[in-house]
Amino acid sequence: MLFVHRNWLQTNLFDKMRQLAAQRSLKDLTVGPTLTVSNQRLRAHVDALLKIPGAELLYGGKEIDGGQHGIYHKYGAFEPTAIKVSLSEM
Image (cartoon, rainbow, N blue to C red; front, side, top):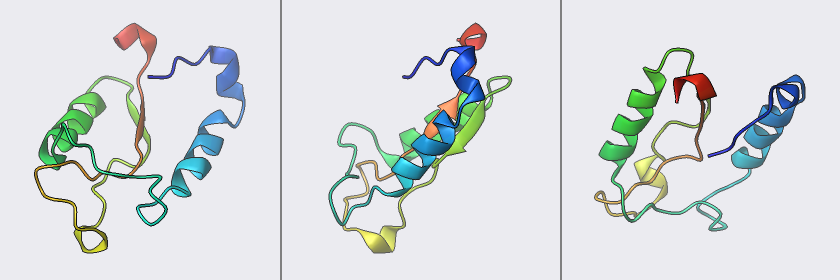
């Protein structure tokens, strides 16, 4: 969880985070499975967060293509993901 002061919303912080997240991959092990949560639970969590008024998917939110990995289906294999939710909604 990242708390962002409103002044930082005037910068390119989220764009920079998106750029850095896009560089991560299974190939260099900067992305890996989530052993405690399945893709089904991750998807349900992302969907629930996006139902919060004003919530916004900044990047990610999708499963890593199954053809790109051999991660067992009971583990999570999601792209790096960020969802913006206002503090007042938390």
